[in-house]
Amino acid sequence: MSRKRTAVLISGRGSNMGALISAAMEPSYPAEIALIVSNRPDAKGLERAAEFGIPTAVVDHTGFAGDREAFERAIDAVLREHRIELVTLAGFMRILTPYLVNAWSGRMINIHPALLPSFKGLATHERALDEGVKIHGATVHFVSAEMDDGPIIVQGAVPVLDHDTAETLAARVLEVEHRIYPKALELVATGKTKVTGARVLTGAASESELQLVWPD
Ligand code: GRF
Image 1 (cartoon, helix red, strand yellow):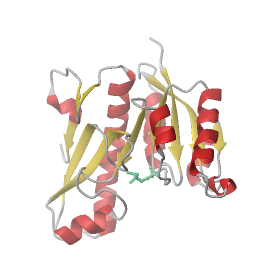
Image 2 (tube, rainbow, N blue to C red):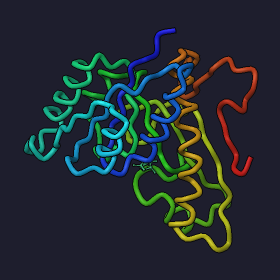
Image 3 (cartoon, rainbow, N blue to C red):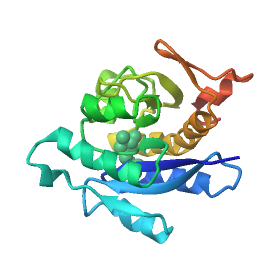
């Protein structure tokens, strides 16, 4: 089996990156984490990646004078240089232009800390509490031109509890993120995912491959 050479794009602490690296340590896992790219030189995740001996690259967006496409061309060049086949966004805090989205269409996935299509954008946990939802969660989806949009691959749900703050809710959702992201990458890397319109089909016998409810 050839494992798909996968890059993780980060901007911060990289805990989802860590979950993907751990999953990929299993030799039978269908993807290998071959490169970590950060747009911030001080991203904590870079240190973690180096500890695992994974190649890292920094493409600092501040060096492109606001030219988003030039920044993305630089990212694309690094990905190609490392013969990357799949791209995972894991807390990568840049809005993408159609340039990078189209270049990696069907081969780039993102994790968002909410049950899309609810709560796109930032401060998802605060907004979930403000709206009084009882079920919250996380989503892994293919990246499309719209932010936090694109066909949904896997979702994980958590209950919202009486005493929750944005922090406690975020922590509960993060545990689910760390479980659904490796699952989603596995589905994409094995070529099981088929996108029809907004839906991602996997032909899975068991629906549980595509959803996780915590505690399970
Ligand atoms: C996660 O909550 C992810 O869903 C969001 O940004 C956060 C990144 O956290 N897109 P980490 O860097 O993976 O720890």
